[in-house]
Image (cartoon, rainbow, N blue to C red; front, side):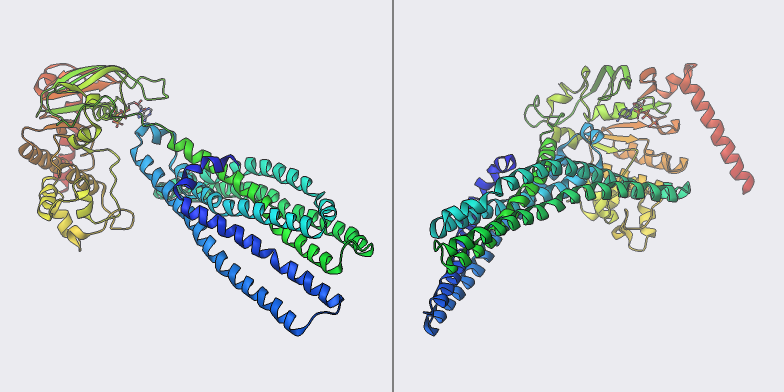
Length: 587
Ligand SMILES: Nc1ncnc2c1ncn2[C@@H]1O[C@H](COP(=O)(O)OP(=O)(O)OP(=O)(O)O)[C@@H](O)[C@H]1O
């Protein structure tokens, strides 16, 4: 029952709905006691041959009024209690979503998308059940059960009531035992469902890869295995679930048996009238629901507790990147000064960066090159404070990154990541994502800068063309250029292109870089690339290898050194020549 304590804040918040709902529920339980009493009275009148037509009509009238009253009241408590539980689900869903959007990269590295989806659907549903069905069963089993037992003992026979209640402690024990088992199995079933969710999400996202490698059948088999696991674990839950009803029916059956055997004796000895025994057995019938409700209560509460714990353990994950040391709103401007003695990703032993030390004047262009896995993207992530460094510092102007507010930092950077993502929306909406108030002429200007304007005009719906999963299929280069347009639209102080020109040809790359140089004069640009022509004009080029800077300088300076840069540049020039030669031959 701890979950009710955990949910107390919500019950307090919704005290009107719950208060009214519980009071009405108690009234309904009370009114339910009346019909068996009336039936008993009528039976006694029949036995004593005193039943008149008017008397019968009167009792039937009373029964009808009570029936109509409980009908109306039942409707009201449902709206009150179930309505509140739906509001709880909405509240938790919003809290979770807001929490997810505030979480850092570290969080998403630890939690898989499928798990998070399962929390936002299944777990919230289970908590909603606790706040709705759970409250109903608790109140109903207590009020109805209590009223029925008190009425039986006080108005008919306390001896017979005691006898018929003997099997009840067994029921309490068994339901709590089943509840514990259920809790464990339900937890396993939920985990298996999360696993399946992950699997489906990965399979759908990677369906093209699976098809390319002819792995569809393997994927289907993998899905079947996981799906069977989910079914098996849910069947295990259902097996315990299925024990609740028969157990309660058996116990109620024993109670009936005792009522008939001992009740008949009381009637023979004259301690009870036949009408009273009739009422008693009818009351016993009314006890079935509270007992079932009691059984269900354990069931619902166990599920709710597991889910609530899971949701709250997620919600209690603290943001690791915070504004704590930041002062008031401040524009992020000034020279960039980077000193990273060493950096490893959380949970990783491997050093991703080592002894990184450089300075970049505001408004200049920085080029970062190096073999794959040399640490280029890591450096970019640290510059934007996606992770905090413990050994070293990064400052812009007079302040370190931690001394700026996160919102100010975010507004400073325009980032085109390697794994760019377009939403299922129009091209115009995608480009205006970071600045929804942008006018269409601003959107077009950005697209022209990113050399994608002509391509967009060639689509039937132009800027209104829907892209993403539900829209037209764009080439890798087109997606890259739309992502660049999106990043440059808000005119960020620092533009970061992380290998963002890899899918465009050399001429387009040159055109984009040329326009950027012209339009972003005085603003900082950071470019990582494999093709050295993309960073040739940078004011400072860093060459990384295994997380360390092995060369730095301008293109001219680096070409004078006999190092990796010069070797790679000459190699790529040669490749380009060969390629151009090939094209000329074909022409
Ligand atoms: N999220 C992460 N968690 C743990 N290790 C990571 C993570 N991202 C990258 N790494 C590791 O950090 C090192 C540097 O990776 P990084 O992505 O910065 O290289 P890169 O130079 O950008 O490579 P590429 O040119 O292929 O994009 C690699 O050894 C990589 O395995």
